[in-house]
Amino acid sequence: DSRKIINYNEKAGEGVNLALRLSHILFASEELANQSLEKLTRAEWNFEDMAKIVSNCAETREEGGNIGWVNLAESFDASWEGEEKKNPNEHLNEILPPSARQQIFSQSTKPGDIISVESRRGVHLIQVVDVMVDVRKLSFVKARNNRKKDYLFGRSGEISPEEWKKGGKLAGVLGGALFEDSSVDPTELDLTYKIETMGCQMNTADSERIEGQLMSLGIRPLMDDEYMEIEEVKNNGGLVAERRKVKKEKKKPDVIVLNTCSIRDHAEQKVYSYLGPHAKRKRAGEDITIIVAGCVAQQEGQSLLRRIPEIDLVMGPQYANRISDLLEDVANGNQVVATEASHIMEDSTKPRRQSSVCAWVNVIYGCNERCTYCIVPTTRGVEQSRPVESIVDEVKELVEKGYKEVTLLGQNIDAYGRDMIPKRKFSDLLRTVGAIPGLERLRFVTSHPRYMSLGVVDAVAETPTACEYFHVPFQSGSNDVLKAMGRGHTREKFLQIVERIRQRLPDAAITADVIVGFPGETEQDFL
Image (cartoon, rainbow, N blue to C red; front, side):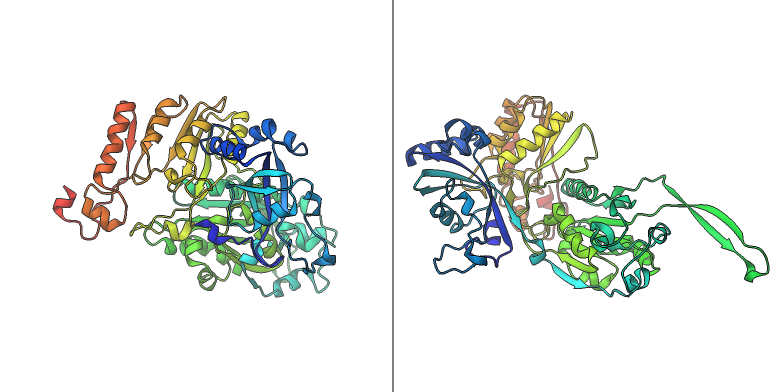
């Protein structure tokens, strides 16, 4: 359960969780609140729309019930002595009284949950929209040797714009942190990045989010056809006049990001092989930031720094949209490893999409299964479903930008909503997203026979925008092998799903993944 990651009932100010972003709907009675919660659970209503129509809170009604960020550094102990005994949420007392906040903080919740609490104002349906996490408290930070910084900047820490243009760029300039007191304007720097993505669609979507973060810092993608002019000077020991020669050399990126995959054989070796030339550049004195992200980063953690000391940042998939925060520590001359479990915050920046027609949209992260052959639960963490409203808002924005097709992503997409309070259904999400005006095609991957309900097939059949396509990896046709794999379903369950698809959608395409030669598999199992 992802709620075990978070504990709001910590001593004020000491936890890694800083704040919750909340919305609410205020009712006069518990009966009305319960009836409305049922409609929200079945996706018959949108939380924001319901708040605008039925909420008794005049202060937040027009904003769809939005309360905003609620600081977790609040104690309800009368003897608590915080900073000047100031309550950080005092401004919310008339909207969300302290008694209601105390009830919220005492419960284990996650983004997407809707809970009911009471106060002197009535009964509140509280939606947890987002959570703010202090990623630095979750990261391992190692200080680098700063001799190179002293050499380039001098003991005063200053460098002239002319010297800067000659190539004296430190990795630390990424956030502009080293130049707060100097004459160099970081916005005038032409910093570039290159990102290499390995593995599945989830990694592709993560890379788009990473690129969006880098571009928000003013770092642009390096084009393949970019060159720079290098001036060579030869004087033959002063006996002959200097000869100057200008040659063109292919431009190299200032930031290298390798988004890795653990599934393929020798995954770690491929990472070391890819990073070798870039580490060599760094050892030769070039200012380059090396970032390893994705599943190998999550799996190997600090050992990557021991193997390749030139790496600046190692981060797991759950930090893809927090890279700008982590780079602040890198900018200060540190090596950072961020692989601890964390709730995934909604992204405030926009992904750099690889297509202008089709887009990936994450709906659930992680996987709670324990298939005996798979490392995904270890590298991508526990399941975390995104709030329906966040998904809908993202898809609406994509449609407004002209996107025609959206693919909903999840390692185990049929498990969507089972980690929420109250639980939701993926079939309801399909209908909700599919009904967004302007969307022409809706796809989703990847389904798991154990959780794929017949209701999902019905939802596809009844949603005009949903493509008649199902990817359902059954992995084996033998129940004995499926049991050894820990799949949690039988061949009969998979065939039942196929039969339902053929009944409702005779022309639908069905694809799958199959493992052949699983340890212990016999010829009879194969046949």
